[in-house]
Length: 632
Image (tube, rainbow, N blue to C red; front, top):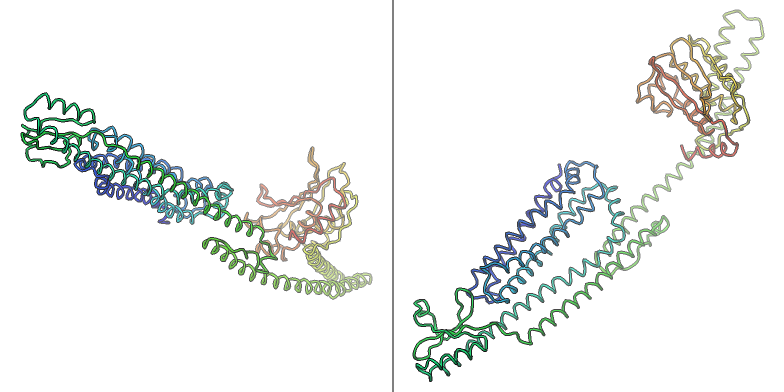
């Protein structure tokens, strides 16, 4: 079992959970200090824990849901099975991107919900928005890390897929697979810049806000002392000062009588339990508390926002240009590979283009190295072709030698045997001459079979088709088989359905094929009759010739190889030859656009069926005869 596929889903889930946990721990440790939340740190931690809980829960659910369709693929790859579907590979390939997007979306939703919590740091919009944006920025940055790690895990699993399935998956992706490269480059370049710009803007805004708060606090202390110390116990004057503070968004209240406030420092910016900033002022006759209003927005903030937008735009342009260049390199590599042919590979100059990117150039070098291997194979193939041509020449010489050196003496032996039979001979001498003649004819048929088989393989078998009566070639084959099977206990009978049309065939070749089939049936029959039946099925356009054995047949495995020479040891032994007869018979029948098959009978024997078309033409028969060499 392959561990990479079997443990893929748990590892992927653990990877995303670990990245989110580390992200939120870092956010909790640095966000309050970065945003200068001060006394609202506890509330910030509660908010971050709330967001983390929602994001982790959604991560587990989304990972299981999105990875479920790829379950059959993972199980197949885990056990090393090739039963994989291309669409499952496409789903698995898209899984890291979908999980990263889902993680960012979950963080965005959780951050938006967190602004409604009662324990959110402070009641100002800044506290709610700044913390949510910072957490979202850090989570988005972590999404890039989880995407890269997830892509690495997915790539290890995709390497286990069968090449044919992977090829179909790549076809389904099509041109969009290369087109998405540009988008990924834009995201890879622009996203970090956007995160950095947003984080820097939040940091600047936090320090600007803190500076303005300190300035407001100093102003409040100075104004309170300057206005309240001269008034003394004038209550009406204090009310007018409080109204003046209220017009500027501040609240003036007495601080005496609060035991906890007595220990608070004077003139220092503080925050109450609700997160509202205030400052204590000593008026000489007691203490007052000035609650500050909403933080002011400075024009410099717009400048930083503009700079962030410009930085992200430049990053997007840079990412687009880099993506276009990388896509162009890949397109050049793809076109070069598709144009690479045998001649280019032999020269080794098909991939001479210089790539802009090192990894694409490495791909070029790998393809060129593969071309070197192809060149070695091509050289070996050329040597093999030369050896084959030499073998063909030797075989032609051998066939010519066999045709003259074997057939000529054998024909002489058969001729002298026939001359001797004309003289007065004893019964024993006649039987001996009959055996010599029969065995000679068998040997002559074997030599003709070997020669014709070689001619068929070379595409040089001569055929002379002409209109022929079915009964003529069927009965000629039956008589030939009877003569060659003299002495056996098997009888051969022929039966032709009346009213048969003429067939446009080479009668001599069809007799040769049918004789080989009948002799094979005779050898597989111990005794009895081998029937040969020629019929024309109703509404049929093909003639059917059946040759049935009367003995024990062959197993299915051996029966499937009976028409291939040298492949069936059992049938070769039973036939008393190498199986060339049936192979030649099948070739002759196929030249005439027919087929030959073998099947078992109900009695345990076999039946050979030859099918020949009723209509045929000379050109197609000769064309198929020349094609037998390439088919073989």
